[in-house]
Length: 259
Length: 235
Image: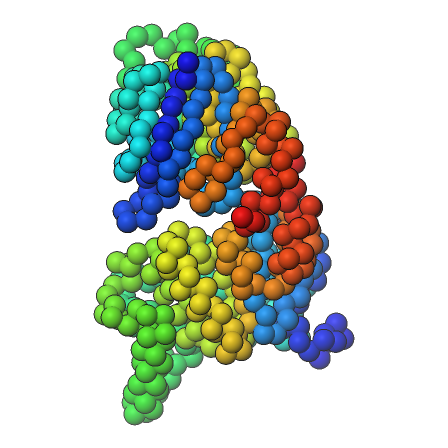
């Protein structure tokens, strides 16, 4: 147990993380905490460094300096799949569904370390593999019903609309049953009707105990379901607060208007 | 006399309308900025004007003549040029070839126009034989502007010319935009850097959720505290 983790409610802790690309300092000494059970938003103008910070947390980039903790364990520098197995899952701004697989197959692939992946089990314990596969399939169906995509279960994921792909991403994160879900612009390219559904699903999952960290430009989503809101500008954390505080913060407004 | 007049424009993608009745105008030799939060419809407005997205309702007029529903290839002949936000140069072609591509509908000698572009952008003149994919962000943006100028337009549409550029490079691009305007070209510009854009514009429009919200001189919009709040979802 590390000394830094005094507060056990801090599910995710980022400490003084930096990342440069060439001469560009994309993320500069960023620190933040995500408390268990919250929907925390990460907002800021284009180019503030939000997605880079996501990449640093989820293992897609290695920080130049600084530390990242998940449930008290250092995860900075670990590979994305290791971080996934430790309980952190993220989505991407551009959906990354497996287009030539059906929705059901997309979801059934998510839970890692399935019995059938080991040749030994597949040959000598087929009943165990079958039993587990049945379980996974049932969960996948249940998840598809939750995001109201069940009627499309045998459709190729590549044929979905942008909005439906967003819902499939949410479904995939649910299949992983993680401790914390990082969503990178879940509302991008989503029409207003679907947006309301999306807000509803996130809210509902949060009610079931899921913790979220969300990068989003849609202020309706941010201001209605997120608290706290962390604001980034030019690679640094500018401030943090409740929706009410952030809305009235002149520094935040100035950051959005540019220098 | 307005060189561009957009009235009650409705447009979008398949079943989703992004613009729900936008009206703007731009006078001869005027520089006008469109600002607003992400998803307001700024880029969609540019694409609709330039005929890249079909207009569902409303009208667009250029120099007093209706151009609603016209295609980009027709519009460039009338004197309108457009610089997209991304993918605005041909990365595998040289700088000079890119400029030639910008004028592919012209049959006359391009030397004079190319020289003028290089005079405006000495930085890319030095790299005329380089493959444009090797240019820096600022160099690429200069080339994109230069390419758009090759048809000697009367109106230039710019979609976020400063996106992704370092502050110093961004300021240089904005200075060039001012120079282009001084040479007699009207400019309609979408920008995420509202302060810079309004600071150099004659007039500006604030777009929110596909509708006009505010319209005023650049200075007045900058001084309006409500404009900033709109970025944070204030009504």
